[in-house]
Length: 314
Length: 325
Image (cartoon, rainbow over all chains, first blue to last red; front, side, top):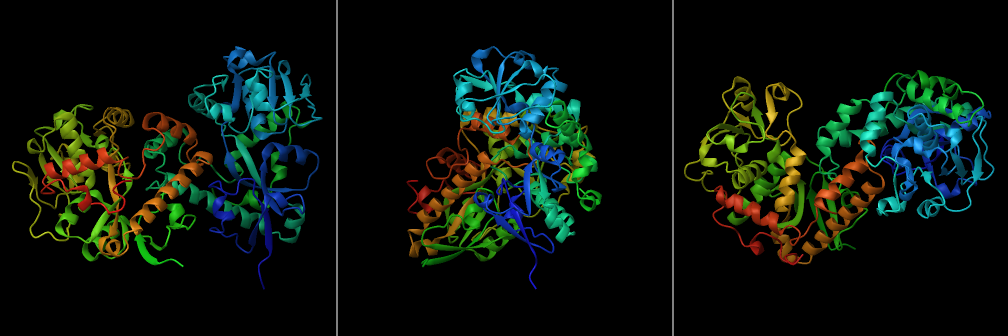
């Protein structure tokens, strides 16, 4: 009798924290993982996926039944993803007030984190920025936040100055190519992000793994099985860098980069559990409320499979 | 249908992985990959010439090939690092941090006098900073390697004194009976990790390495890739096929790493960016032309330090058919 299938839709199947599962190197106990072609996702629903935490928060407040497990294959500091037009005269966060800022969508997780930092850490009044969203018809329930429709492409509008700033979860080609017309709000973003981490203790979560309620009802042991597999995948990815014999020598200074990493964030900065992530989860749901993604601060504990949330371990 | 089935023993370097897992194929060749620890590879190759292709210590390669060992070198280098900056110095020994010349007249521990890391470190400290191997008292940790074809034990040049193994280098450092020890990475566990008592020769290793690289263009290679000579004699085209495959595998890895850097290194992008600024697009490039200076220098060191009798002509070391790469 063959094992039940989990149809998994990966947003990033080849990222090192996902790859051991998407490639089959790490098995999910009791299940056979079927990696869904992202192109096919519209045709039938996946049983499980990795998804943006911002979108998840919005869906949960609307009553979506999905079940989350505390596996977070993508985490990033987002201060380096705030870009400005070089001629706009924006040299510090407060300079953004009164300016035109483009975003992919209000619920985009990178944006939630970046805006949360701007408001709470840098004291920027988000109601004073003119927001333009690529997603039509967006509104915020936060008082004073107005979101208009973006009429064009984020990157080209930043280049030609129709936008003064952009928050983008990807790195625009113009930045990679060092086009002088655009730059990061924080040119020395590494120092800034390290300082942010030291001061706030927040390591922003980008993606979380969720399962459909229907699948969990049919297979109650699936959240724990999936969490165990994701932990193993993460360990695998980390061992190649943090282990005794780093293999990623495309980066020549990997040993000193690892030392620096350890000094900043310790050895255990990517936990797959709820307890060690309370601060980041609390912050995200707070920011989502502050920014009007949700009409109240959602209780993140309500997202998680109780068994997965209770599973001891890192 | 591949013409050749060849065994390959090598570390699972990220730059080689696409070739190991089959994303890249060497034309006309089916590779059977064998995963083994380095010391095992060294032993089984040096003693038994067991694998058709393998990773190998530069130093042992330079010594064994002139003695008739049935291998030739592919200009595919691994384990490139500036190990000299991590020479560990005992606080209170009189050796000042950042002053390698203070090593003259002192006692130095080295696991194996002939190993590649020691070869490079000794050579760079001599050429760059005037540390003369004859003015240092050497303490060797473990017995000499067995180089195939050797008819007598290794003898260093006149004036170089090596205290024969075994020497417990950690113990000697702790007791203050030696002043410094070569280490590829500064120890992070054990008594030698106590930075109040033992410090790296250069306080800012990466900065010194950058300085050296900017000045000389040298990125020391510790390991090479060797290929069975008798196989190459029968199939001369194989060298080029292998070099092209390694090059493509490297290209893929670099592309993947740039697009999806390792998650564990939160600032990986920044590290890659910084590296590109100092070292250029690809400091790990394969081929003869890209590595001419490094090859010449490591041969010079091996000759000066008594490990080879002469500077071997490249065509007697490297595989025919890739000399123009």
